[in-house]
Length: 392
Ligand code: GLV
Ligand code: MN
Ligand code: MN
Image (cartoon, rainbow, N blue to C red; front, top):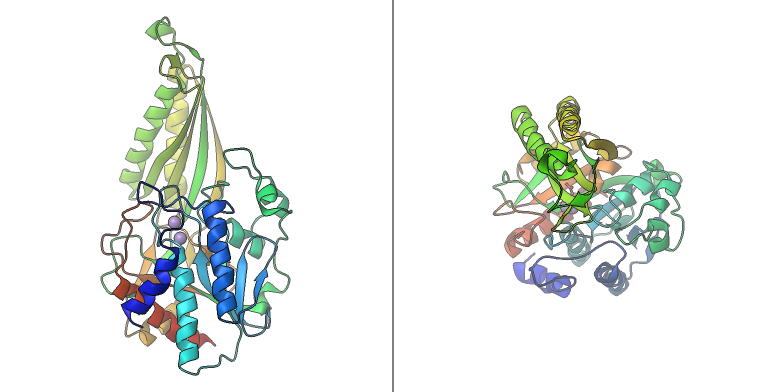
């Protein structure tokens, strides 16, 4: 496929949800993402691909029998982190439609159904729990729990969806034969235009509620304060140190403060820890060490800390034989792990799953600076078409 053909379809969605930072505000089931979902339906319609909804907010565009046996799914997600890049997610969906165009132009007819999928709420940017759509589809979360998750304005996922989610797809393992998710690479490791995923680091999100005593910033003597901001600040540094010592990754990047006033000692600071490591014992050890140090520090500050695990994504090893087969088929494409989360990781617990990565020249992601060259994206489409042909 030429870079020009890729860019022509890509340009249709490039401006949707882009804000003045240059990044994207594409929260699941909110305005710009709803426009992208309409774009998805239009693309499917143009290609005579009927669209179904699984009752969980995930969309499927079908080439072949809807939910016939052994369907091969390919796609990704439209939602972004706040001010995120435009490639994380949508590249997999645009590439899926283009790969189908390429197969059809070559006169190919698949022996198994193919569906382009758009998973809902992959980033957890709106409702806090990543891969919500794929967790619902596979039964990894109770529909009632998903329905009750709230966004920052108090709107529940159930309200945004307009219903209680349907939950796991009946007969999932016989209906879905495989999933291939194409994604922009998000590390700094892929030097070839296209690579194949081997594994996903285990990762999770923990909410730390630090409570203290709200008071006047001007009149409260330093010795009398119970300031949760101090405990929070110490915990941020402790997370960084523990992760460095363990060769893991830990980040505290989201924070809420009450009352969030310049001249008031806060009564509450709520911060989220994102922790990841190459294996689960290492990740658990980092989190345990951070919690221990936060608790000790709270004792010294006269504050309290309560920690809640909001989501855990288990370590994923993709189907090794499948990854090897795809790599060979793509001219010995590099096989590499990632420390970013993906819906493919959730699906891999139930069905054979693979991921293709498209080179990211800077490695930057979850940032407006995320970028892939159109020529590499076109190579990604070619690779995906080859893989879909092989699997169907
Ligand atoms: C999603 O992209 C994540 O890795 O958090
Ligand atoms: Mn992401
Ligand atoms: Mn993604």
